[in-house]
Amino acid sequence: MLSVVPQPISARVPAKVNLHLAVGDLRPDGYHELTTVFQALSLHDTVTVVRAADQHRAEPTVRVSGEGAADVPADTSNLAARAVLALAERYDRIPAVDIAISKDIPVAGGMAGGSADAAAALVATAALWKLDAPRAELLEIAAGLGSDVPFCLLGGTALGVGRGEQLVRVLSRGPFHWVLALAREGLSTPAVFREIDDLRAVGAPPRAGAADDLIAALATGDPHRVAQHLANDLQAAALSLQPGLRRTLRAGVEAGALAGIVSGSGPTCAFLCADGEAAVAVGSELAGAGVCRTVRVASGPVPGAHLLDEQAQG
Ligand code: C5P
Image 1: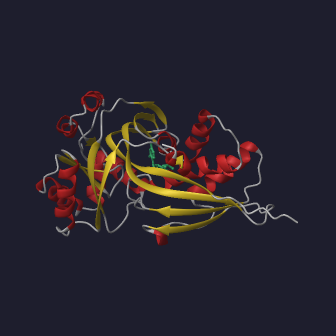
Image 2 (image 1 turned 90 degrees about the vertical axis):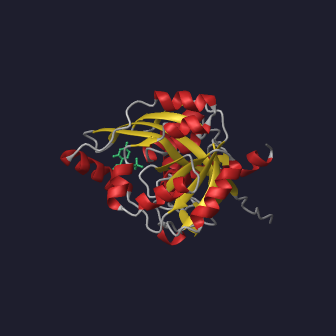
Image 3 (image 1 turned 120 degrees about the vertical axis):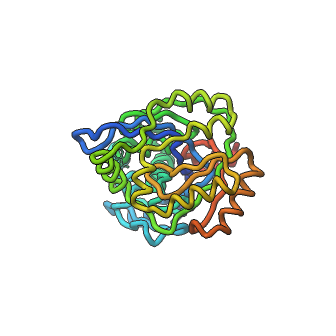
């Protein structure tokens, strides 16, 4: 009898940074109304899916390796597993899939690591099952999984409104060069949103407002102009929960970055640099400054979640 060896399929997915993150009011559903500009950066996770030996098994399995793997759930609470379950439900499949996640995106770092894995799992599993799923359908499933998952599918640079899941592409003449300072301890996104509500109840932390100036700056491709308009309402909350991040932000600018910002809900700090050479110099200086766990150099914008062999084809 001929036995068929199951063919694994891999998708690669970028991290995100929010160049502008204006947090509005708390909605009745527990989410905040956002106006945000995302950029996808060249720091990637890879998610590989393969048919399970038991094709009747009702749940996916999850294995995690790489950056922060010990802190990532390896069961069906993992967002990548939930992505496979959501896709199976929509297309009436049995989710008998083994998922392997190779991480380079920091865990609980404000760079959408979990959401990225969900987006990659959607793309890889849709290919595994040969679903030919329309992009719009994947984006809808993605939005049901988490606010950042649609952007992880889309990639590039985009304006997000609503929970952050309603996206329009933004013209960005890149590449922009970034240094990322990864923290020792993660931050919980819901805790950071709660903290901004608490800070606003007793004071008036800065508000980012509209994103128009940043969007205009991105179109010029001039990192000096973009640097003047980076803004993140969650930064005050992240700094309140991890005061040591102030030192990290200062150290990056002293090392020669044009500007530094907490990425999303933090605690990763993202530093925009004048060019690739400056980013390498800032990165090595920051690595020696003892203000973070480790440093990465990345550029953006880059494409969203895509099959690995698609990339090989260019
Ligand atoms: O959508 P996601 O599950 O990634 O969001 C994680 C948490 O972040 C939410 O449960 C909520 O506490 C907070 N959040 C928010 N407003 C948003 C997005 C996320 O309050 N627009």
